Length: 105
Image (cartoon, rainbow, N blue to C red; front, side):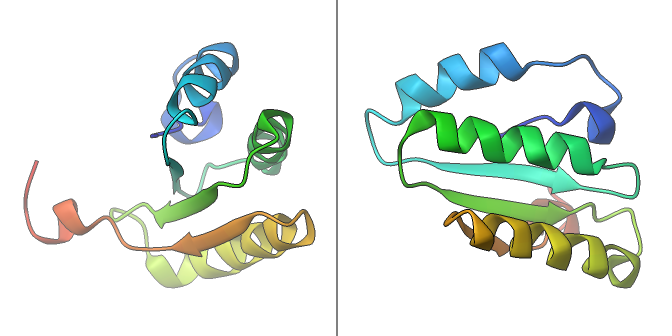
């Protein structure tokens, strides 16, 4: 499930839609993925953590550093988010945006 964070995308807030979709997706095995960029706000990550907790399910959260940003500059932010998730018992990992690194759309 691709979670679009308002601060990362500049788009509207889709928390209700994301939660509705998550409840449907969790009828099967699912994981969440979200892109982290320079503009990603802590508040959005807190809302994402709450959404996972509200689902009462064990899911993995994948954090993807925005490939157009300097990865080294995002690492402290991602490490902080991984730590927050771990403290809430949410399995978290981060992987690059492979499709962009490979030049795929």
